[in-house]
Length: 304
Image 1 (cartoon, rainbow, N blue to C red):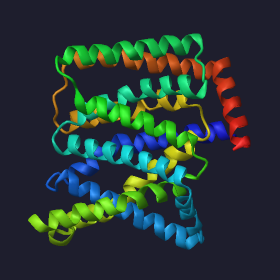
Image 2 (cartoon, rainbow, N blue to C red):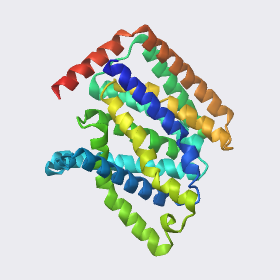
Image 3 (tube, rainbow, N blue to C red):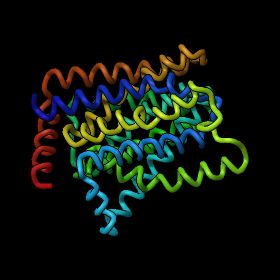
Image 4 (spheres, helix red, strand yellow):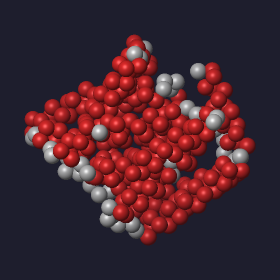
């Protein structure tokens, strides 16, 4: 199996997992959003540390000796923190559909970033698909009548996060080790502050709550590592279009969880789903620009 196919499989699995996440985090709706974020960071870092010790790869932290690299990863980590907090806030406040719409916006941002910064190109069918997706998102924002801040924050932060992940040469696990290491002090501060005002759920929760908290690291890391590995193997434009899988599943999840689904959202999603179908057709036909993007990606990988 070639790297492009591997990357496509990785990204699809990651998006399916993300689409199912609301069911998981909803089990912790009685825990504050900021506390959940702290657990996600802390247990993700513990898992990464165990992996690095087992593989004898702790030297990955030598990257902190490079000031430029450290600054880059601080920025990436902050994007991840903002994205995680916004998503958990949305899920625990019955805004799963708004979160889903945020991840519909992300493909547009990913595609634009791929074109602007990575010199990726779209074929005719892909341009048509991109145009329809833009129209769907614009219609949604206008029909809302207010600025959908959850949608905008989630779409923008993860789009830029994907661009920076694509530019790093580190493996998915190594990259996540650095990101969670940088965020762990913040997680510990959060838990310290929370403990000053009330008991933290990890110590006073029932068996179910504690179990879901402890496994937060594994649940968090799995799709992120797959995402990081995929972005190194396929064009950012493909990463963007395939991401439509996750929010579609989130919308279905939101409906199952009892959230309202307006007619305006149906119209908006009709544009987006048709866009995904058209893009899928372009991939199956073997679009020339898609092949060129893959070739450019392979060349850049060999140089790095």
